Length: 118
Image (tube, rainbow, N blue to C red; front, top):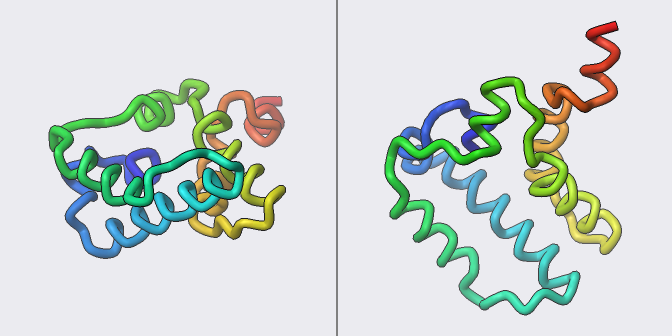
């Protein structure tokens, strides 16, 4: 969410609309993990949400910091992989798919970015 909103965690976690999107993304990731056979706790989304709520309000995760700095990020290993795993297992990932699609063109290693530079 930070990479998409470009604000620290404390600025988006309490916005009802953004929190709903965040929760939906967490639910999607958990569903993909379960479909892949990961032994996730039943309350993993609640635990993750509590972790986010306890984070320092000025926190900017590494993916966000990399995106903001124009550096190659963990987009593929954090979101892209979940999207691909969801697609392969028939698990809908509309929120994560949208986040991936919106962030990918800004990746320095992305084909689109390479074409822009040529």
